[in-house]
Every structure is written in structure tokens, then in C-alpha cells.
Image 1: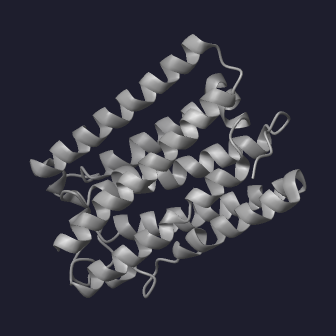
Image 2: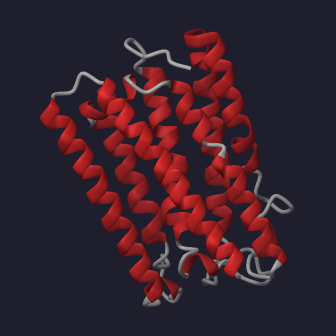
Length: 242
């Protein structure tokens, strides 16, 4: 149990570090005014910091572990942030400018972290903590997105803008794979509408630090898809950097 907890801390820290590096690169290269860059950076740190503390406290206090009401409280960690990120991605002009300065392939490379997530879920299953349908031995094939993301990134890095359509299609497939396991996860919760009745139920994600899986790592996965889609739909000033 100690090993898998340490893996969550390490993987989350690495992903956030890479995102911060990409953010500052994009801000430095973008045409945003200095004041806007500073505001964007402060906003990112503030929102991410508050969110990590919030979901950690909610899990440590047991608030998220209640499955008596519908929808279960853990869905608060999943659904509202996803909707908010989608709306923000579509509407934010500053984000559009920032993404133009970040190489398309970088975001695709980052999706490789999903391989590690799948290995962690498999190890949790081996420990008897996670149901089999949440792993690649069951109904979770999200590892495909983790493997192919960096490959698509390399193809784009070598062939450039002619591969935008490929990136577009891959992102929709990746989102489909992600939504597949999210549905499986929800149907594995110990609720009245539970579909997968094998034990254990998918309760572990309500505990700390496992709540970081839906609250941070899954959020990174769908956010990177949203950002990548915005890039290939607004490519006119895209920076080509390997």
C-alpha cells in the first residue's frame, strides 16, 4: 500500500512539473502582454493549489466516501471540473494565444503518463484494492491512449502541420477511451445503480491520495485532449519546435 501511495505522489508531481514547464515556455513565447502573463500564471497556481487541497481534505474527512445519495459525492470531483475545463478551453482567448506558442507534440507526449496510471491500477487489482474491470485485464483499454499519444507526437514532430487531421482523430479516440473507463468506474461504485457487482467495489478513489486519480490525473488527461483539439483547430500561428 505504501508503494502505490508513493507512486501517486510521484506521478502527480512529475505531471504537474511538466505542465508548469510547458506553461512557462508558452508564456515566454506568446504575444500576451506581461501583465496578462503574470495574471495567467498566478491564476494557474492558485486554482491548482486550491483544488489539490480541497479534494485532499474532502477525502481525508470521509466526505467523498458516502454513496447513499445520487449522484455519489465522488462525482463532484469528476463532472463539474470537466465541464468547467471544456467551457474554459472553448471560450478563453488567452489560452488560445498561449497554446499557439506551445508545440503540438509536447501535449501529445505528456499523455504517455496514462501508461503508468494503468500499471498502477493493475497493481491495485493485484493487491485486492481495485476491481478487475478497472484494469487492462478487464474493461479498461485507456493504456492505448498512453502508448499512442507519444507516437502521434513523434509523427507530428517529423511531418508537421500535415498531420493535424491525425492529431484531431487521435484526440477524439483518446477521449472515447477515457470516457469508457469513467463509465466503468461510475458503474463500479457501491451505489444503488451499481452494474459491476464483483468485489471490491470502486471505493478506493474516495480515499487519500487515491482521490488524485479522478481529481488530478484524469483531469490532466481530458484537459490535454481539450487543449490539443484547440491547437489543431486554431493552428495558424502554431510554433513548430521539436
